[in-house]
Image (cartoon, rainbow, N blue to C red; front, side):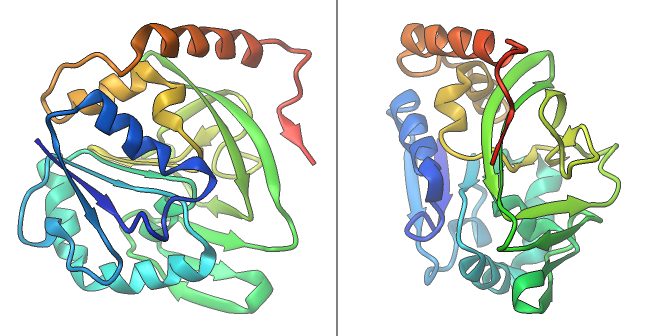
Length: 238
């Protein structure tokens, strides 16, 4: 099994680098390819079994888009083949139609895989928790971001929010999905936080496994579910 981790040296903010670490613990026999931003991605000439990219700075986000723009057709091919691809934090925004960096007065085209737009405003940080539902799984996570997405993702969302908000404050549909490409603005160690989702995601690559440290991970997950369903706990944080 070959798993490609894209640009972790610049795409691992807010604890997102722990997702590949957890995958390595769960899949000790897999081959992990850590592709640097200056490298040609492995996926360009090969079919990996799985791809992951994590959260990045806004400046890096623009560099990543320009890096991947010539590879858009190849990315679409991999998506059509059903290669599992997880993008967390603001990484999924690279697949939007365009991104406006309001504070910098910059607007750039994204890869355009989703017909959504992004507004990024450094003067307004949004911090919140999310409890969502995906494929009969409950997903817990955290958000800390300058950006919101706009448009209709009703046929391409990742989570239906039970508590918290979706791609913007008027939406209850979080993230984006196209085949096995899953993009979520949840950040940090989403896979260790959600061991059942980790098992599901690996299952998309045709492999049935138990998540690493499963007993402890499930205990923590169950406790967090109890906290996230407690109406006394606020979901937004200034």
